[in-house]
Image 1 (cartoon, one colour):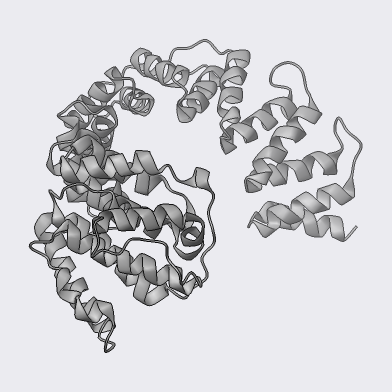
Image 2 (cartoon, rainbow, N blue to C red; image 1 turned 180 degrees about the vertical axis):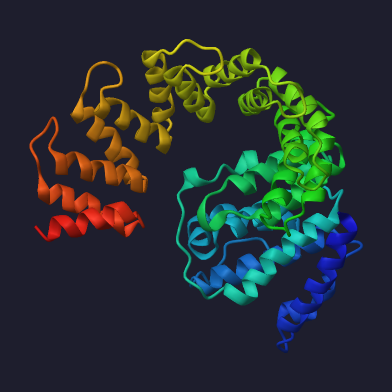
Length: 427
């Protein structure tokens, strides 16, 4: 990780020096303050001091009430004083991610890992020279907890604390919208993962698996999940099992898949319980066992896993896997799945009520659930709504509504709806 960042930083420094070659500028004259191998906090603070002063001058703040670096106070104290005294102006001149970095670096007391800090300083300088004249949307004080972020940063850099590095990675991955910075998350997750932090290994595995901020790499994801799983990380165990189960980044191996699904399920991972249900039901790598399958689905459903709730609803509705047919229990689990916006559960509830499968036909409930599915884009639900309004069974016939829903289903590619729509329009 350090070598990669050092190489990247060297390239960025060379590129940045070309931007600062305007004759007479402070940065052109002091560019050598930034180096890859060694860097003093004093040098970094001088750089930040010039950036902050430059931004304040652009905000027409020409008379800065601040002791100069040559006087008694340290450069660090000068930067922190500037940040504190001109906070409102700076928050209008600096985007949130850059603002945070300036606070973090200015607040360091010693420097244990200069490569990572230089990487952050380069982020600030690159923004300063490329985007300093852009309008920046001011942010509210509640958007930023200085003390928490600064303490995390200090621990991550100065103490090489893997937990702090992981939390910093989480911080950068959790920010919404334009402030989401996957490259920062990856940097801190890598540092923590290298020190054996299982949470960071799992999180970094997700980035590689999904290709977020990095090139998609199943082999790397598998290796990280395996490292975390061997340390007892429940979700990493489940993801490792998934990769064995689907043959992603590793040859398919149902025996090892079941082993790791068992580990994850014992640690309370509801998704793993559900997949074990599939393995037992379909006899994947083992003899099929309907009783065990149903037991796994129940545990997963009771733990809140929506796919298990939906499947269990179907099992009771149809009387499968050795279970007595029980429409009411099926209805119960479909409703639990519907509470989590499961589209197929919406549709099936519409079908159950509109067809009277509970023994009581309730067209209004059927319409309600079909509409919920239709709003989620289910073309079959749109077709069923067209049928209900067209046939007028249990409600007054409404050709206008029938045409509307057949039209929406036809637009979604449903051929039956397209035929019925033309017939109604030709009446």
